[in-house]
Image (cartoon, rainbow, N blue to C red; front, side):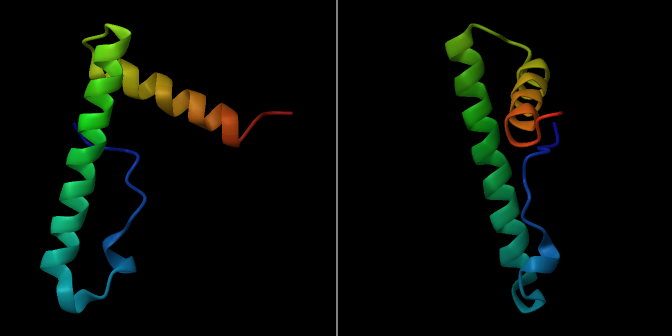
Length: 67
């Protein structure tokens, strides 16, 4: 599953430490997945993709409300 919430891009980090940049992004994606698993578990859901879609939709509505 690809984490759509990672906003950090490799181009943001100096290329001299590109391995470290990829390691950081990998760590962030694993952390996001763990949070998603905890939220899904608390809600009693097993479909992580569906939970991610709900969270994404809620976040969009919160920060980008339609008029």
